[in-house]
Amino acid sequence: MSRPGRLPRHSRLPIRRYPLLQHQDAIGAGIMAFSLLGMLATGTLYYFGLIA
Image 1 (cartoon, rainbow, N blue to C red):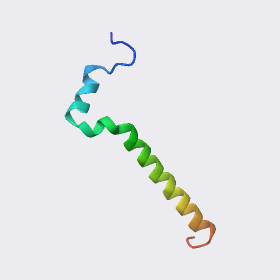
Image 2: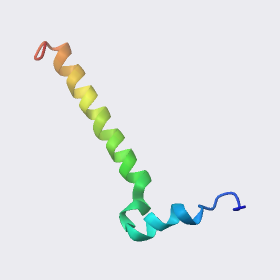
Image 3: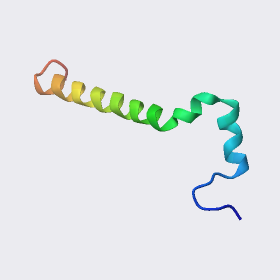
Image 4: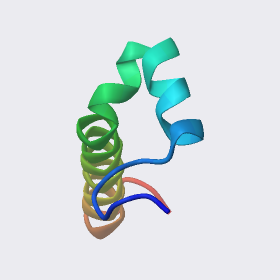
């Protein structure tokens, strides 16, 4: 049984193979921020009647 806070071996392998996954929290936050920006932009355009 693994200790708390440690990833099992099968979860660490993709991170070693694809180093970009070491930043997956930042990537997810960026995607979420981009989505929020898109929602705000769409809502603003709708509010001002520029899109229907």
